[in-house]
Length: 402
Image 1 (spheres, rainbow, N blue to C red):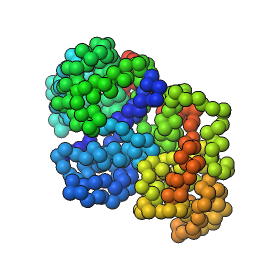
Image 2: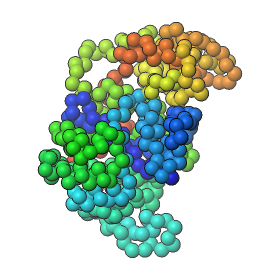
Image 3: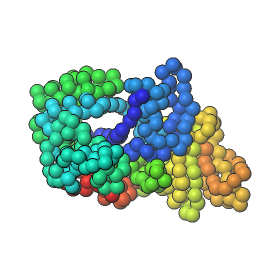
Image 4: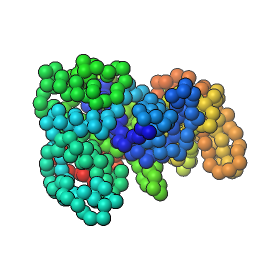
């Protein structure tokens, strides 16, 4: 059965001079939207499910990259134009073609660090410090979990980001020209599973050449804001929604407008909100009751910009809501009315239980304000920006979470 080991969302900004890769931990709890099965049927939405389970929907050897793409679009509110899957053998082959990649280890690594079931350290696999790896050695490096940092997949992400940064640096140092890129593109078409838009060496080369003006320093790597929830990973809000809102607005992690458009007057984005209200002290959960991807993330960003605290976003149990509902527990009607002011035409509904939740309807998706107003923050949260890696960083810097 196909499994997903590592996931990056790469956002190329409209100015084609900035790029941001976001690592999504595989154990992140998300809502997996309805996905198509190999027999033509569809699954039901799966809330509170590990992110990497999306790739296994249908339980086929090839995996289900379309379901992973759907899940990312649902999570972020971004349209994913291309999906690329690299298997382990293909990954090793690509590193051979570029002649190896410079990496760094914070300490010596032995066989039992790669396989914790071994009772003895075994032979030395990597020595501490900088070195060049290719083929199986490169694969061992990116898969290494135990013995460094906290031994988790989260801890491994920093080294994966450092590896991809070094790979980009190596490719760029050899020159982004058709002659230099052709061997890499030919190897990639044999090693990757890609969508039709990238399904040939010529198409891959064309895509790579379109990125030639992006400086290594302006190629950044960050991780989806996270916290541990038992043995799983939970998304930290509102930080995550602020990150997605920045990407949708083509804002860099430093707040720069990289969309190639005029920014307008200060506060013009916020003024597009239907009704300016203060949500200070009000907690809200947001559910997408439509089939429009990313609608919950957009509403969460709007609420957050109004001072509300968004406790989570997910897909509603049904996606056929025409009108937005604001559901509230006992004693919360006044606060619910404040929430409803953000969604013109929303209906209030008392329910059994605690808290306030918004179930978005098609009326919200179709409103002109929703189409035109996606809050554009001046910068992503400092916790995200401060942990960013640039592709030109020293390969020995910032290697572990633990």
